[in-house]
Length: 196
Image 1: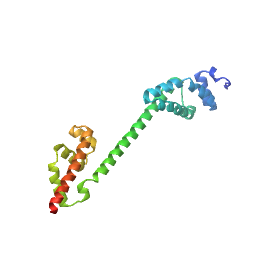
Image 2: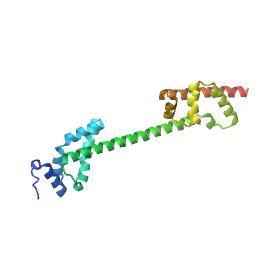
Image 3: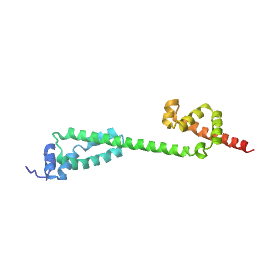
Image 4: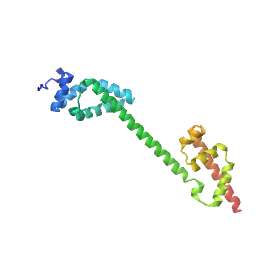
């Protein structure tokens, strides 16, 4: 049955859906989607918690319907659309979380790589340096020594040290930074002593 598209507003959801699936005419889908756009926006806003992201999602969902609806089995459009919308938002959140995790891992690797270059053993692996390093490590404050040992010898990440030592990440970074600085000062003093 062909329904005139002169006034799609007069058609029911079922008729609009049927016409779109039969003719792939966007006028029918546009009318159908416009009836629920405010609901789609509301759901997206609820899950994504950001107005701009919710607006983008409304557009992306329309494009998704253009492709998926012709072959979809839809008995009742409104609840079907809600599920599609919710799943879309959950996938977006999952993607975002995955990107953040990768970024955090990358940042931590960068920090560990750049700081490991400052490790005296990496700079000059010989027995004299190891001996002096051991002496200087013993002179450090306990927190600094524990963090340095965990970071370099235990190859622990910041997060692992935080959990094991039960101290905030800012403190861990501070102990590592100050510990490295104190080690360097101590080693320089020892080198001067041995030179004289």
